[in-house]
Image 1 (cartoon, helix red, strand yellow):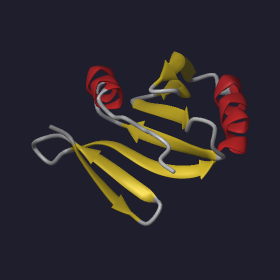
Image 2 (cartoon, one colour):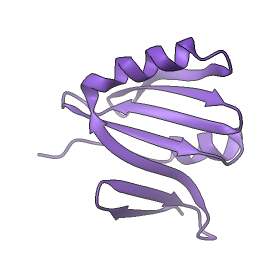
Image 3 (cartoon, rainbow, N blue to C red):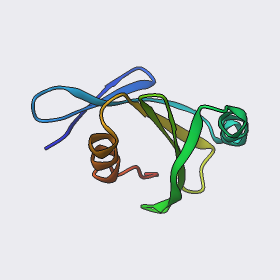
Length: 104
């Protein structure tokens, strides 16, 4: 079981022991390409994964011990950044169990 806490525009996704696995924030989706370009230019960053999940395009980069997931929410102007300093396995499991959807 994973819990989500929203405080303003920031969110925490926690495991059943109340440990934060992912921290997130919202942004305009138009900035995603700028983030992707910055990560591609960063020599210590590596692309971990990219694709589509729950109708949303996403990509994930690792920089040091941090995993950063960038999600464009459906056909909206909204994106979400989810960052984790947990292990790659824990971060990936938390991301895969999180559903992000656009509700009208």
